[in-house]
Image (tube, rainbow, N blue to C red; front, side, top):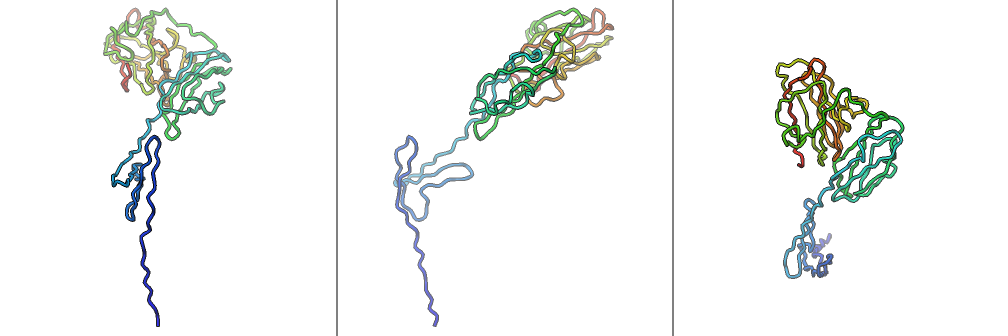
Length: 298
């Protein structure tokens, strides 16, 4: 004869215990066979605690603010070979930063940097553009990369013609760089050099362009340089000069991945240079405008 044995499964009963939280008095947990005293939602990070009094208290996990690089710039836009210079950076919500790029300068000799600091470096012996990149982290989330550069050059740029210096604001009726509504300008073989300071934004970019020749002959060229009146491409950053053309346009950007635009460094003073060719003579009228594709912080 076979014997049938029935097993009675009894619920597992745990004694109530206390939950300890930082700066919070001990919470006596309820004794239950059906409901867990502490429940964690893996999707939201919310923690639900059931107390002995039967109250449900929800502790919502907070997402820390992401790290942001607020500034990253070189002490000079152009340095001579083997000469000292420095890079300075600041960030928020970051615990450390990681450098990359900067070939031949010692920029990556320290693999982990403080969230704010200054690095004293030495330019390489060869001439050219040196790009530097910085990424900061809070331990779990990385910031967007921030970039800056220096020009290593032995020669001082000599303007190819006399220079008429001014500021961007004075020339364009108090419009702050990079803004300039469509304006008629008279250019000539004399160089017009307008000084401006690159903004603190690390995501700003725009374009300066001649939009209408007004039936005038001749060609115009543009450049952005750290010294007024420079059009020598070898002494400027990549894409920072546009040669003589009826309607030239020059794109620029601050930070981000270098592309087909003149790379500017936050807080550095530059000169936007305009010059007409011999066919312009004493006057070469153009309609000029400047626009920014990402709103600046001014």
